[in-house]
Length: 164
Image 1 (cartoon, rainbow, N blue to C red):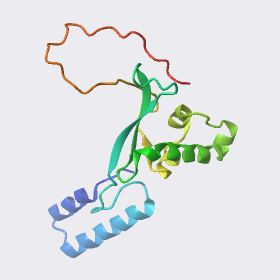
Image 2 (tube, one colour):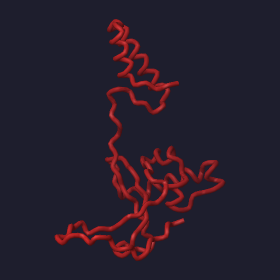
Image 3 (cartoon, rainbow, N blue to C red):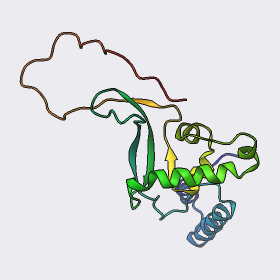
Image 4 (spheres, one colour):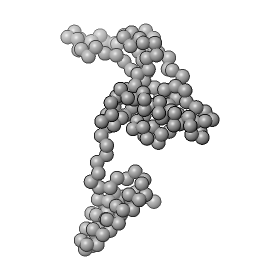
């Protein structure tokens, strides 16, 4: 069944000269049905929760100043502290490992949590994983030099190994 915005239904009804009382009744019924289904469509007037992006960096050896790193792009609630991400990921891993699927193949690393744990379990902890695969994180000193850049960028010395 096709999903249609309630505003679009309102416009079509008004265009076809339907009485205002009938339009209001139909739209109210539609909003009640949408809220009963719980299919992720939000009733008009409710704004989605504000979120912020966070990059969780994998730095197991503590070399943040020296090398390239890998990490995951996560999104959390705006009111949530980024320092609590680890705790929320651990809770999601715990919940997954105590599920039927997790009992067969439990997650043991943060990489496993980001790649394997279902979005529904992570969402219950207010975490949305935007990149299942780790991405490269490059460090910068946040300054622009006054000299022109070289013609070609220097080749990287080495690329990090993705954690497994």
